[in-house]
Length: 219
Image (cartoon, rainbow, N blue to C red; front, side, top):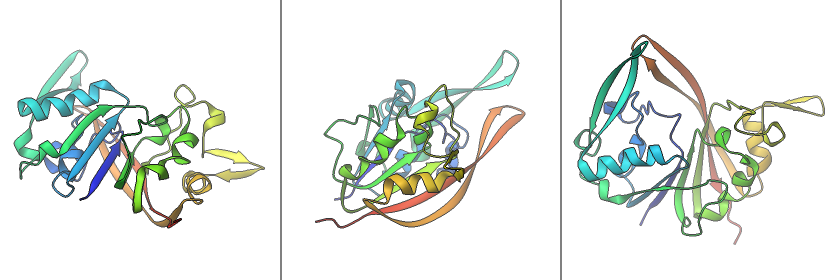
């Protein structure tokens, strides 16, 4: 039985893996992954994003708004049938949670995806140094991040990258390696670009680094 945990999806709204839900504020990746995993836990700190997923499961559709111009807003709708072609939505469980203090029930996963998460945490080190406890043997951790640090969200003394240490630049993968290398083997990294629609005539191109890590056999 394969279990999957995805934490955070607020920035990855334009999930390219689910072609029908680009630029929508939806946890679409969870429905895509439910086609391949027996169980998917979708956890986010924001209740608003949880509500989108639950609405899709319960009513079969969810609505979202995109700014058009000024005070004009365009309303759109996503249908469950468009992203759950094989009827696997019941495999997903959405819940609100703090990634730095996850409940004990979240454990024994084959795959964990931290999707645009670490730069939204008040203590990313706490998450990175404990997440190995949530994986099954040979489990995989995928960290997706653009490392867009904001002192209003994460205190600067908690940043894991985008800083200088002893005069040397510490960038994204360097910071991750510092905290993950003890329990994980680094496998690969890729760049994934997301085009996020801001309004009818403007968008933001986000270049995310996708790094893949495998839990070391410590038994």
